[in-house]
Length: 199
Image: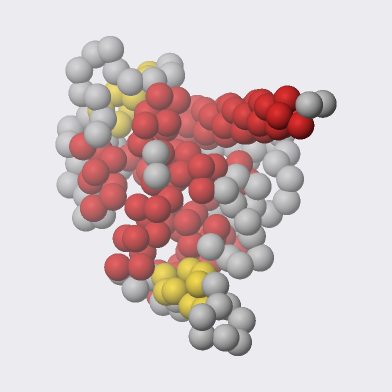
């Protein structure tokens, strides 16, 4: 399992509520960190510098690697997170359902109650849970960024790789930007509604 798949499975816990946009940005960050670990990319300042095309056995990771800008000027991390993250949580849900890692269940007693997606108890799921219990730094940092396991704190775990530290910081910045956009839209919507009510 990749870091992104582990993160998605953790976010599927019914007791947690993670927005799809937030999760998609964090999943893109997780992919980039795994590509760094695989030696497929390096980080130069705020830019992603691809290396030799990697041999990856995960279709979503292969798709992520294929989407990298290989000619200078290389893409900024933030820009890559935004375009790679578009609808990424839906892509991971579909892939994990296809792999048998997620299943759809009806909630409530009625057969036509609302449907929800739940992790299946598989070896991969147990490995994800173990990685989470072990507080693996990258997984913990990305989960914290999307609000899993309490409020975000300014105390990020230290990483051995400066590139990973940079990616996690950019994920945080992108999530703050997304929240600011949401708040601005909410204010605009409320102001528009007040105009129509004559307030």
